[in-house]
Image (cartoon, rainbow, N blue to C red; front, side, top):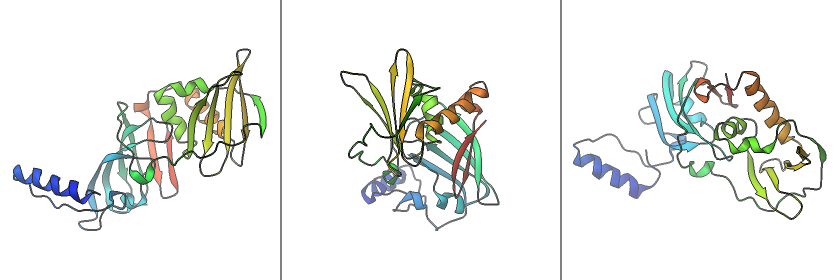
Length: 226
């Protein structure tokens, strides 16, 4: 299945030159296609922020979904999910820092105006924003704040890492003072609390390699576990 009709035609011609004539569908692969369902396998050649419910519904129990899960913190990994009879799926992270372009509807929206970073409550952070320099840490953190964008601001006073949730308007702003990380948060969801909880859970498990992680997907959302 290919979204762009022109690319689908090019693929059909290329496969034909190899004497291969699979069924080709033009349309939105995030919705998959009812023709031929239920499928034994779904293989995605773009990344998704969340695994579409349609893929779960159109893969037979015991069938597998191979996809790259990414996010707006710019880290992604290849995962292999097995679909279960209850309509959920789970499976291992395969690792390798595999990167694909996010599907168009899953790409980050424009940031728009920054929130007023003087609002909210301030405290000393137990984990600093520098952990987001690490690919695996960003991948893990994305599951805790799936609709947040990350940006760095620079001014004469100090450099600030900002997480801004495009869905709820919540934000977390972090900077260093006298060798300590300070976080200011506002909005319905304390973003950095969620990140600290997620990363602390990973640290408590002795920071296992991402290949030791399992992804669980339900129609309500997805999570990462060790």
